[in-house]
Image 1: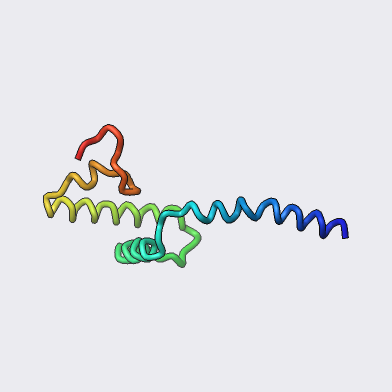
Image 2: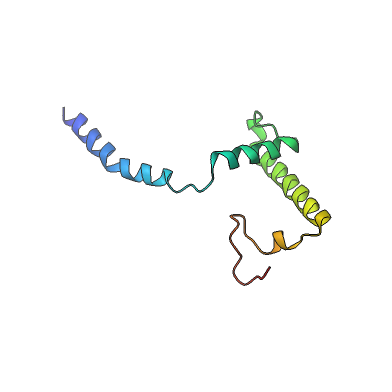
Length: 95
């Protein structure tokens, strides 16, 4: 009985921290899907867990290169130089 009470109290104490952590995400489900599609288009396969870090980094690098080439082809170089990953302006840089 005492163990159940202790477990319940610990669970109640940790519950607010867990829900707070979940509310911090600013990425939408559609953004995650779009990123996954981009990664798959450059050859990433998520089913090879043995080489996960290397595979995802390589695919992200290809996506970044592809995005930079597309931006350069449009003549729009300010999009990469004036923003951070989250889309917010980088301090000290002008567009």
